[in-house]
Length: 192
Image (cartoon, rainbow, N blue to C red):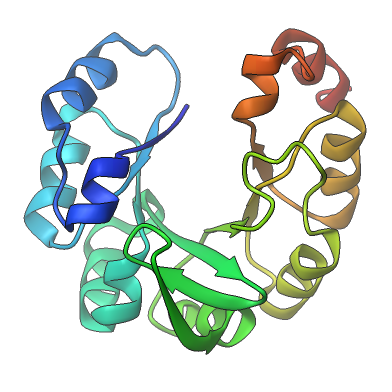
């Protein structure tokens, strides 16, 4: 389960910890959370609450030391979210565009100990068009670490293509709500 605290992403600190804590207790599947996580204490609170993975985005861009410490202390529980617009990393809930390319940023984070990434093409997120296959392929081939794809995924064919390109996983949002993707069917097809 992928959860993003959008209030936290915009404000810089988690805004829905009570709900996230309740979900962590209730969920019987691995859960990852991002949005407004900018310090070790928040990471610890989330992991102690039962969250399996914590996603750092803006904090990773602004505080590489935090990434290094978090990866050292929590290992695979740390994921770096790479949200891009036209290939450039965006932060603060997608409101600020940085002057850094996704691959360059991922390589820098890998040197700090990051073992897994989430790649989102902001311009495709929620559009039900298709993922940015070219950018995802470039990232997967450049870093040779697990990458979870997000943004624009709207069919089982997209999921198959992402798998064949080397994506470790995919985040599906709007396509579940609209019925474009049936989760049970998608899981059966992908696990074949």
